[in-house]
Amino acid sequence: MNKYFHSVELEADLCCGCTNCLKRCPTEAIRVHGGKAKILSERCIDCGECIRICPHHAKKAHTSTLEEIQGYKYKVAIPAPALFGQFNRLDNVDIVLTGLKKIGFDDVFEVSRGAELVSEATRKLIKENKLNKPIISSACPAVVRLIKTRFPELCDNVMPLKAPMEVTARIARREAMKKTGLSSEEIGVFFITPCPAKVTEIHSPNYSESSAVDGAIAISKIYPELTLAMDHLTEVENISQSGLIGIGWATSGGEAAAMLGDKYLAADGIENVIRVLEELEDEHIRDVEFIELNACSGGCVGGVLTVENPYVARARISTLRKYLPVSMNHLEEDQISKMMWENELEYDADIYRLDEDIVKAMSMMSEMEGILAGLPGLDCGSCGAPTCRAMAEDMVRGKAKESDCIHRLKAKIQNVYDQLKNTI
Amino acid sequence: MSNAIHLHYEVSSEDFTRAGEASGSVKKRLKSLGFNGDVIRRVAIAMYEAEINMVIHAEGGYCDVDIYPDRIEVLLADKGPGIPDVDKAMQEGFSTAPDNVRTLGFGAGMGLPNIKKYTDSMRIDTTIGEGTKLYLTVNVPQ
Image (tube, rainbow over all chains, first blue to last red):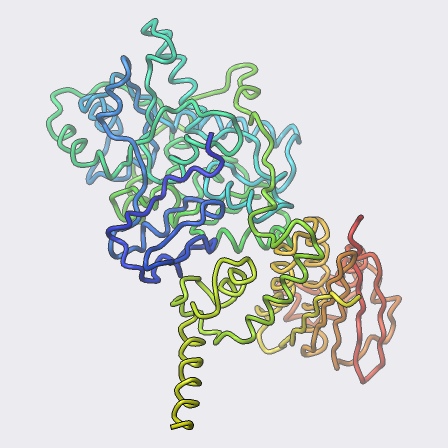
């Protein structure tokens, strides 16, 4: 397993080396070197902000295709609830689910069903006082990765339950095996994803050795085919088995509301998420039991692989939920133990620290402050680092040189020019 | 020790929401240096409390931080009114914060007690009418 697999990739031909992604990246994980953006693998959390901002479409998410599902005898689609917010005038989720069967899947199992189980399990664990409070949701993989790399003191507060995608995949696979008599390898379970972070979670899970999902197909990729299939349905099958809690997970606040209490907080958008985590770490947020965090504005409907404006999608989701029962999926006995993480979330200290040895790190930091004092402080990004501070850090790490700063270089050239002028 | 890292911050009282800038900046640096998470958290919490105190009671001041491999020392100095009764100020729940501050959720009288709780040593030098200096140390477990 690759320690730092990423679904966010650069298409070098399209990259013109501008500073848009560099400045937008919330973890300062991008550098522009040799006129091309480069992702620092260990810092990237796959939030997809660079894909969103790149005006040249040079950033892509590596996702599966509909052709790939053909490698399996029995193909199961597990759509994220965010998918249901993508269609105009949709009043029945079953139209979407039947549409998925028309474009090549043998069966469909909604991730919102797993979400209802996760909600119920969370409520149960809170009631039994088995979790460290405040509990931070583990559903958004970009947020979990962020905590793992930047917030050592919060790792123990992340809810140790698998995300709905994983829970759903396991149940869907088991049911498909029972129904068809096929082996696990012959069944392909594909997540219909709103975001690249979920793709990464499949290839390199945050808290288990391997994922039960075989691949993820972007909502935006199947959208044309799916809408076409939906328009030509002769019959709509009864497939959906989710209530309003499960569907509600598509938008920010949905998971938190499923706690059925009032001691919760829901933040969305990566900058807001970072602010909340900083405040949590400093213990400024009190009297809150549960914290839902989504890297994308609006929640999963704001994922970079969706099609519709997240606010429009949000409105549609709330209309769809209106007449649904509260929850249609309930835990079986001992099911919680199977939903728990296999590994603990461990802080990856190496990513941001300057050196393993504090004394050495301190001398590097002193050097860094000295370098920083000599840089112009414009944070222009022309050197290829997002800020002057990041540039100074790259320099002490031996990854950049002073002349990469065009303002320093210009001053030097000016100096040489002035000297030459005086000697002539 | 020669290899200490010294940081200096001015704490402005003009904008309430800017309190926390110094502690936030120190926290970021301590993480880059690879200090233990608990040490970082304690420094950040204690400093933030003290910054808030300076803004509420003393119209700001300055803050000096010295980072050593085995400890972090913080001095927070203001030119405020001074603390008339330090023992009383150390009692949980005792506060002289004005009402407008309390409505924002501050001024619960937990500032100094919390600072003491999160640090390994705390010393207050205060003179009525001249100001207060707060010396804090958080030790790094070896």
